[in-house]
Image 1 (cartoon, rainbow, N blue to C red):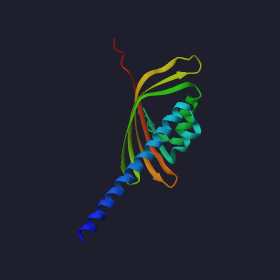
Image 2: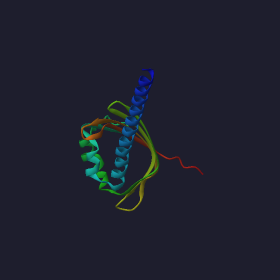
Image 3: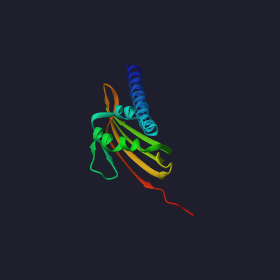
Image 4: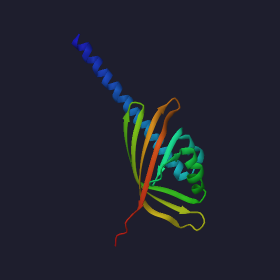
Amino acid sequence: MKKIILILLIVIVSFKSFAQNSAKENVSKVLATYKLAMEKQDKEIMKSLFSPDAVIYENGDPGDKAADFMAEHMFPEFDMFSSFTYDNYVSKIIISGNHAFTTETYNYTIVLKKDGKAIVPSSMGVATAILKKTPAGWKIISYHSSYRKQKVTN
């Protein structure tokens, strides 16, 4: 009897660990897709990552519905960018039931179409996101990002 209970406990713990790793992998794919959508300036991919009631916060702004933020801020900027590139990207993911809590740190550079100049040369960014597991997969329900220009050292 003790062996059966022990085997059941091992199976349950193994299954839970597998499910947690699978969830982390799926959330990691959402974050990677967000990064790809930024780099490709792909509006359709970007829209697909957020739940309909998601909110985006940026640099201390009080937050907008994701659809409004994208239409009024993000997508007009995409139209001005020649490129948006990430460097030194690191993400951390915590899964808690049907929610995921993430932190991303990275450097990024934005180059404008009009003159080919970097408007944000190698800035340091940080983002936090909350994702929810839905029937359609993991969706971002809250996203906050901020940045600072890197200090120039001589």
